[in-house]
Image (tube, rainbow, N blue to C red; front, top):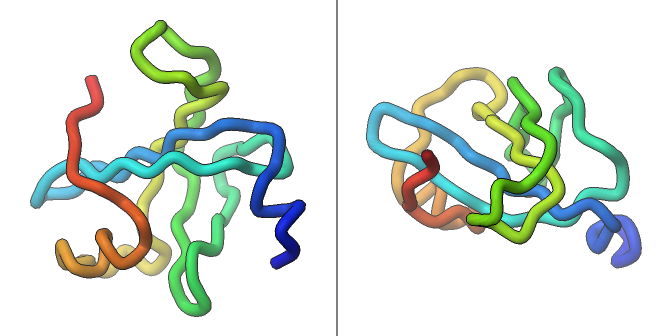
Length: 92
């Protein structure tokens, strides 16, 4: 992916709620996200946008929040989420 596409104008917070905890990652997107959008994070790793929340309530410096799930609904381990640039956190 070109560097310009990876540094798009839209600041997004990816939130992945799992049984093991909540995983967060900030990302810049080149286009507005929408439910059903697949975001490729690595060669074989894609997260699907399930829900989009627009705006910022002051807790985050972002434009949109994307509630995401892993493509294929496989159970990712903690190491998988960390490798993809997520960190364990709390999203309320």
